[in-house]
Image (cartoon, rainbow, N blue to C red; front, side, top):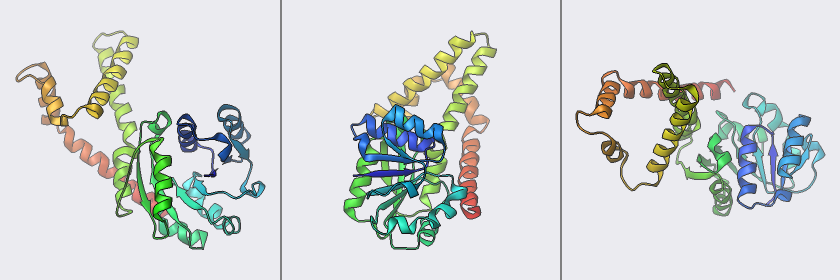
Length: 269
């Protein structure tokens, strides 16, 4: 299938890189972006076709990936109908906060639209993507999207669009939570006397090892934690300290704040 990406930002880079890594033919991918340096990256590093605007692209295509800034999405989408009337492509939106209803109104024609909430680890095929389809999406089109998403990591369809905001709070923004946690551990270990490079390496490796074990083990997360936590031992003291100081409540508040802000941004757009 021929893919056209409208916007050459980080998410386009993650998706295109993952697809090509998994064997997708670069000649079937076009990235449209007005910035010369971004076009140069995609053309030179990934070997895909590039264009400065959709007005300079006339070939038929199967999927249009909307990866522009959400704030400018309405203006761009309202300019697209004449370019979409012939190909009638599937629209794949990775625009945070932009609802399917808004896209349908702006595009002003009955098009199949899939809204996706991926995350940045997709660039190393370790992503987690939530998907929601409008009523025009066929099973064949869903299968096509699943093939693309499988190259990026795991994926799941949600029954209501509102659940994508929960996906945002969990996995869309989640990598930043983990990076911050690792950063804190690294800094604390440094303050406790470890050389900064050693603290950084061990903080990263511990996170990698724990995440890999959690992803590949058949044990529950509670059981995995129990295997590290001897009763009245050093780890137990740390876990009890976290529980007594309300770590779970802190995470509840953080994820609620993330979801609410995602909803608010969608309304502003």
